[in-house]
Each structure stands twice: as C-alpha cells, then as structure tokens.
Length: 139
Image (cartoon, rainbow, N blue to C red; front, side):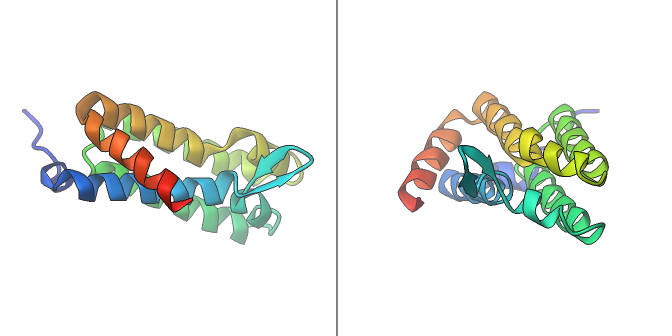
C-alpha cells in the first residue's frame, strides 16, 4: 500500500526550512551549547546529572525531534534510526557516571538532526539549504 505524504510535506518550503532550523537549534542546545576545555556539551549532559528526572526530560526533547521529523515526512527507516539513537542515549545515559560521560560523547540529538537533514536533502534539497542559511543568521 503506497504511503501518503505527511501534511508537512505539502507545506510551503519556508515553513519547512524554519521548522528544520528550529530543530537544529534545539539539538545544539541539548548537545553542544557549552564548551569547557575544548569539550562541547549541552543541557542533555547537565540535566543527565539529575538521577531519573534529567534523563526523562532530555528523552522527551529527543522524542519531540523525532515527532517533528515524522511530521516533516521522514521515512520510517530514518525515524527508526532516530529512535534508536534517542533510546540508546536514554538507556546508557541513565547509568551513573558512565552515562554522563556517554552523553557528552554520543550527542544523540545532533545525530538525529544529521539523519533528518540527510533525509530532507534526499527529498527536498532546497529546504535544507534554506534551513542552514536561516540557522546561521539566527546565531
């Protein structure tokens, strides 16, 4: 049975580009907002220090990125890989100390945005170019 495109696929290009740029900024906040001794880390790593609550909060943000990717028309295969990244981050991130180190290195949200950009580049190359320009102007 052929799949029908998501309603977001039919939205105007500037709206899709704005959505992708917003998700890209969110992923940066979660995974690469701060720098200390040359190591980039974000709110995911900081909130992960709070047992249980921090990992659930950052996993919720990861699920939001995946949900938006689905609304943008990402294929199931891409969504599954994104889910695997977020799930891995959640499970291993929950391990005391080891999980916190893993959060700094793994950067699941940045990986998911890279997957989403590749997916959008395949289907809608101008959206990714526009989102990158939009993101750079908002830095």
